[in-house]
Length: 475
Ligand code: B12
Ligand code: SF4
Image (cartoon, rainbow, N blue to C red; front, side):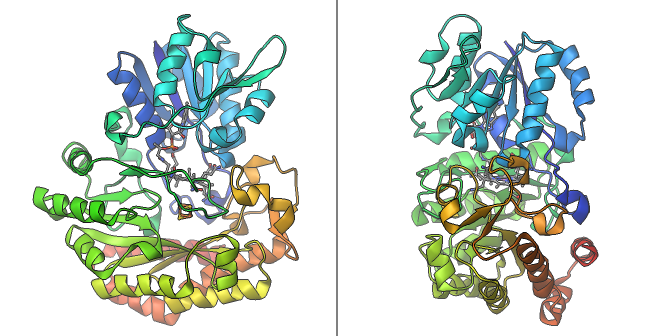
């Protein structure tokens, strides 16, 4: 069967406002994982990335007409809901015989509602979709019944009844999934946000799936933890370097260092392979999951940056979202990185549940005190499927229909629209202003500017900092 996977355009406005050069273009790994698995199993799957390729629906039409596809799979994160549905509707208009399947974070978390509401969608997948998609093809070939496929939701087109099938158990051995075939993409189009890389080309990969922690705002909370083997990770890095010229790799695991032993083994393997001389890399983890010995080893293996979710600058805020950490532990992680010579990025939120404007100011102060090299202040948003979404009315109020999914953006302080939700006692204007204030207060500090200036060992880094600063100043 011929399958096309589509990453819809992500642009809901705020990247435009901040300046197109600041926004990310990130490889759609989820689609690559599924397409690669299907291709290895005798099918013909392609991937088209409307965001990276700058394709409109009309451009997509030409591709779909020419491609003669049997199935189209469309990615669906919450904030791209209407773009995803627009693609599905468009595909059905071009050819109603094409089967349309959606999957991704939003589909995983609201399968029933999505299948119920959207007539252009034939099947919604729930969770990991490589095996599910293989079975769906059997259904489309008339060899299996939809109801017998685990991990899907679908609507009976005759009586409107929605069925959500049994949950699909996760594949425990992650290496079962082949290395995503980046040859399916035009890799030259991909480039992270301005402050997220040191060297180009910089490409994304993941070495684990899931996170066992329980943060109430997070869409991947309590999803376990599975790891690719160390040798497989090094092999994928080698392919990125040798076949695609990568100079840098962005490890986008949720909690890269959860397993200390494996982290050290991986670093040793990167060093033994000589890869540490060819690439630099960065990773995301929790503050309680690093120590000096580990960070020293990571630095030796080529790590230049570590990202930590801090969220709030008071213990009350951190406890409210069940971060299971302390201000002290968090500060220590940033200090250790600085001692070892690894740059840091802190993720903070404004407008958190239970917050007052004073709490946000305390968060800004804490950010300046911790003093990471880069900081990101996003707006607390109750994404569906999270504990915060379930408790959204307890902690605050929706300002629009709760299912106005396109408004589920965390950078709205730089956009024109009001917020979808604010914590009790907070207004959209207050929280939006706080986001802009936090970014400016953090970045326009003489201390930070001087430090950055002294670190500018080459022109491209200076240039990217200037691009970001200008975009921020203009906002
Ligand atoms: C890389 C990344 C990005 C990248 C690239 C996204 C892309 N092009 O794929 C960028 C930077 C662009 C991005 C942007 C945003 N992201 Co993001 N991102 C991620 C991250 C770190 C990794 C995604 C990934 O590749 N995972 C690896 C693959 C293998 O796993 P997977 O995505 O779950 O895919 C499997 C299944 O879900 C399913 N599946 C996935 N897609 C599809 C599609 C089809 C057709 C089918 C059938 C199945 C299917 O099968 C896959 C294979 O098993 C995740 C965190 C995470 N752990 O997943 C957050 C995550 C997906 N992002 C999230 C968020 C909130 C955002 C933003 C809204 C943040 C913001 N700044 O405002 C924006 C959204 C932009 C928009 N307008 O939609 C949330 C999603 C919440 C939600 N309900 O949508 C996540 C889960 C982070 C979190 N923990 O909360 N993101
Ligand atoms: S925020 Fe980070 S630590 Fe918390 S559940 Fe999500 S991925 Fe895990």
